[in-house]
Length: 57
Image (cartoon, rainbow, N blue to C red; front, side, top):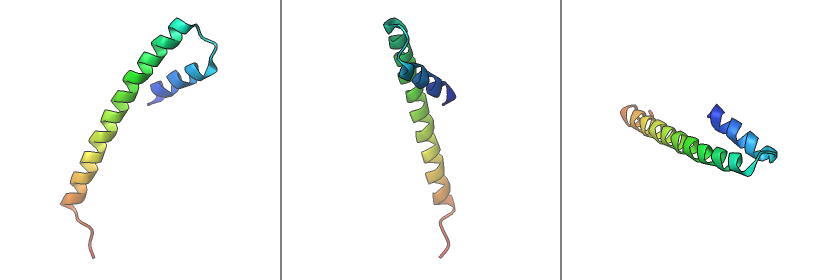
């Protein structure tokens, strides 16, 4: 996640050559997909844990 933040910061500066910006954009897309996968896996684990321990009334 920190790596994705660095990519975003570099792109937001706007003072990098176009070729480097395209490269960073591709890296950002790749890192974003990894983060999305990790979030999805965490959501599944939380959902499964909630199913094992239903809330008490």
